[in-house]
Image (cartoon, rainbow, N blue to C red; front, side):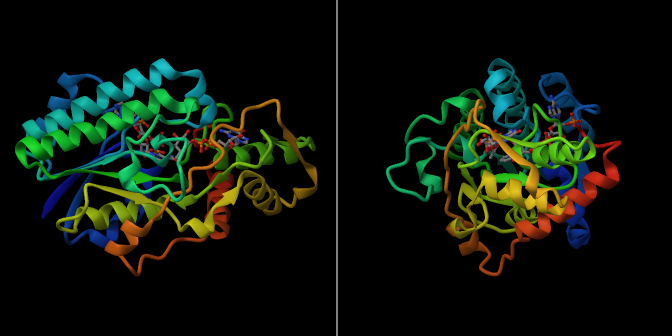
Amino acid sequence: MKTVLVTGGTGLVGQGIKSISLHFQNQLEFIFISSKQFDLTKSEQVEKMFETHKPNYIIHLAACVGGLFKNMNNKVEMLEKNLLLNYNVIHYSHVYKVEKLIACLSTCIFPNNIPSYPVTEEMLHDGPPHSSNDAYAYAKRMIEIHCKAYRENFGDEFICVSPTNIYGPHDNFNLEDGHVLPVLIHRCFLAKQSKQKFIIRGTGAPLRQFIFSEDVGLAIVKILLTENVPDNIILSVPESQEISIAEIGNMIAKNFDYQDHIVFDNSYSDGQFKKTVSNKRLLTLFPDFKFISVQDGIQRTIQWFLENKNIARI
Ligand code: NAP
Ligand code: GFB
């Protein structure tokens, strides 16, 4: 039985992996790590983590993560914490002879100005990312450079995945730091509770592809168990499922029966307008991969939030 250590195991994606891990219980023993056990920005704690668990595989999810406004307002923290913890995990994965490492990039780190969409994996370094999250983006891009260096110099199987906007149970619903989908769920809940307007920041025009956390978890574990995969794989729903922030807000409001109370506040930034990505490489690997629909995903996420709002990150 191979052991797979999941950094960031208590987060949105980590919990997504946990929810599908039973399907792989005959092949993998999962170890889910949180920052309370090991602070990965500290190299001595990373060494201790490897000494303690000696994992065969690493799924590296841990990161200082947030939505548009957290990225815009905390660039130094996003850069320094992510550079530190990514360096430590990748460096010591080599030192402790990890057989396979999968590290997480993101579709928001790709170049902002693309001559023609969709974005594909080869475009990663073809231009600067959107200014709203450039600090986070460059810290993430160094993961790809670092893994590539270990592949070229030592033949390590260190590869990356690039998820698009992820949502689901155990997300960060904090109104300032969270990503748009969980924030709009939380804000719509509060608006209805206090009979206030449901405010959606910006114009609502920007476009996104939203993927449910369990789909990301399943894709990552399937990639882990597949030999000779490409060194970077975008994890996204098809381009055809790209949706505007306004449409997402309306879908969320309809779940709360509150769609007549939506107001857009365009004094706030829209951030990146679009970042349409191709999932061709993923579907070439797994032609039968089925995605949970955004309608079902939103319903499940709202239900989780309502049942867990006392323990959720708000
Ligand atoms: P999340 O819910 O915020 O979880 C982040 C995880 O990282 C938490 O488990 C946290 O542990 C851990 N962590 C943070 N700082 C740490 C430290 N210093 N030492 C050890 N652990 C630390 O994030 P997520 O949404 O699951 O994201 C997982 C990965 O997917 C990240 O690499 C992110 O960049 C990437 N990604 C996310 C999205 C998205 O839309 N969410 C999209 C694309 C890519 P504690 O909870 O114990 O503090
Ligand atoms: O998920 P999000 O915060 O980040 O989405 P990105 C931002 C979009 O949602 C902008 C609109 O167009 C915002 O104008 N929006 C509307 C809101 N209301 C709100 C609100 O109350 N809060 C937030 N946050 N947005 C993410 C990166 O970029 O892309 C992540 O920040 C990750 O780290 C992900 O990499 C893939 O989609 O712009």
